[in-house]
Length: 252
Image 1 (cartoon, rainbow, N blue to C red):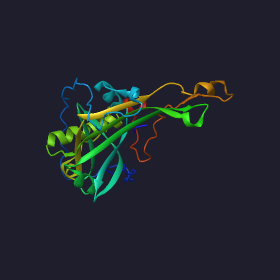
Image 2 (cartoon, rainbow, N blue to C red):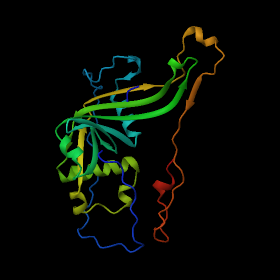
Image 3 (cartoon, one colour):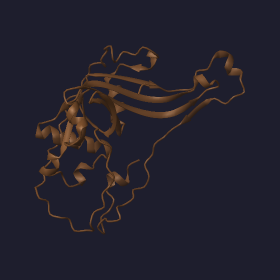
Image 4 (cartoon, helix red, strand yellow):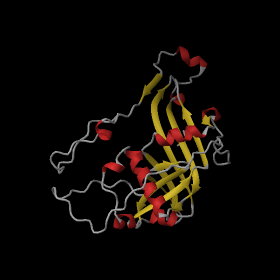
């Protein structure tokens, strides 16, 4: 099967109730006008051409968007000090550009800027149990993206990228929170990768056993895997009377 930034930090305990003054005024977030998405097929480069199980490949760019838009975390592969690193991180998409973020103090994004990287997103849909051990498999949808990591300098694009990342994780959340102020933005790096060079591979369906094995007395089939959201758990320091917003309470 084919198969940023810093891992998400744990929540920090905050003092109760009253909000401290913000040293710098928040920057208003303009609405995102997503550029038109490309209607061209997926690229067919040496890196994106499938050499095995070619029937699992997808050539429609809409399949790439579907895999990315359904995900929450990508894996960003890059080289730092001559050594490979693969970092799990949140991401967002606007048109044919993928955005990731991290601390301006993190070496990974800083040193990988202008260098070739690889980004993957994978959905595991089920375990495929066959009659023969060697024919066990998984049902999945995956995307692999190759490109040059670009540091986003334009203030408007940086804010749009952060909004896309936030909305990827929790649609509707950007407009339900305090916007980042200038000091927070100064501490946050935003990077972009073009979706020009990418491949998509999927597998769905039952196992494929050897013809002679279908008569064996072993169970075979698919054990589906489904991800679902639980009920929201409010912060114990939440101000009294603040309800769970609809975009959180009704997410399924």
